[in-house]
Amino acid sequence: MICTGDNQRQIQAIAEEVGLQLKHKARELANSVEGYTQGEWVLADYGDLVIHIFTPKSRAYYDLERLWRGAKNVAIPPE
Image (tube, helix red, strand yellow):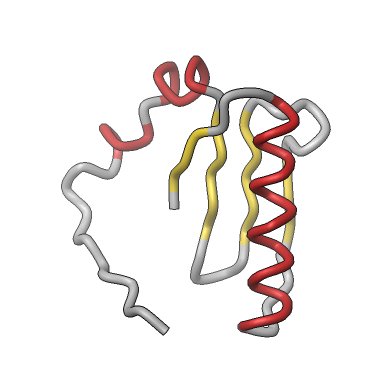
């Protein structure tokens, strides 16, 4: 999953909320979380799910969508 936050605090809040939701609803804990303190690009590894949370500038620079443009889209079913 790739998403964008407007600033460091928002990026950290997104990372925290994703972590809480996965912990409580899916009983999943992150294998590792990197970049949380800096807040430019947080990467959270949940095994089968990897979450990238970028500032707009970092997202444009790394352009992960370009790297994965040929990948298959996977729909996430509603609860």
